[in-house]
Structure formats: C-alpha cells, structure tokens
Length: 151
Image (tube, rainbow, N blue to C red):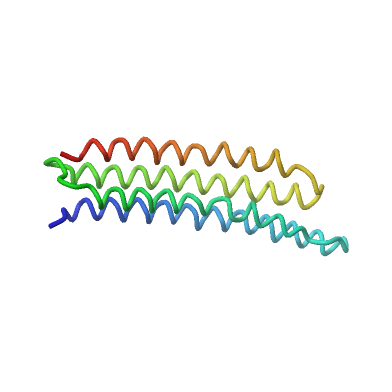
C-alpha cells in the first residue's frame, strides 16, 4: 500500500505547478488581449503569434506532472519518505508555479511590446526561456532528491 503522504506530496506538486501555470497564462493572455485591442484600434492585423507568449507558462504544469508520476512510482521508499515527499512536493510545486507566474507576467509584457512594434520575438522568447530554466532546474534537482528516497 502506498504511503498517503507520498500521494499528497505528488498531488501538491502538480497542483501548485498547475496553479502557477493558470495564473501565468492569465497574465500573459491579458497582455495579448490588450495588444490585440491596440492593433484593432489602429486598424492593423492582430498578430496570432502572441499566443506563443500566452502558452509559455503552461509547460510548468507538465514539469509538475512529471514529478508527480515519478514520486508516485517510487518503489520501496525508505522509512520516512512520505513526509519527505510531501515537503518536496510542496516546495518543488511552489517553485515551479512561481516560475510560471513570472513567465506569464513577462509574457504579457512581451505580447504588448510585440503587438505594438511587430518586433522582438527572438529576444522575448529568450527572456521567457531563462525564466523557464528555473522550473527545469527545480524539476531536475527534485527528481534527483526523489530518486534518493528509494531503497
């Protein structure tokens, strides 16, 4: 039978990552919608490409899902692993979620700037990639920690 604390930690990781993605995509969508409004007001075409900024924070949910499945899949966890997994899940999920939130804020600004100038896609996506890297680091280092909780 699986330790309920392991399951709770795994679900917390996914939930907090997903929460961050929801907030981040909301921020980015608000920026894109505002940029499209400006384009319509100026009788210019609204760039569909702004959806790339809106969708960027959604990947953090995938990182939380990867961690969730890895945590649940640990075979023969060491004694006390349940509490450790709960703590790992909460902090990893919160860190990944924060990455998504701030990526969304930057994505909203990127959409606004790109919508107004029609330029900056490469630089904007590079900046969003740097923010994304934080979530990837958290996921990888948490995977290592989870691996150390197996007997």
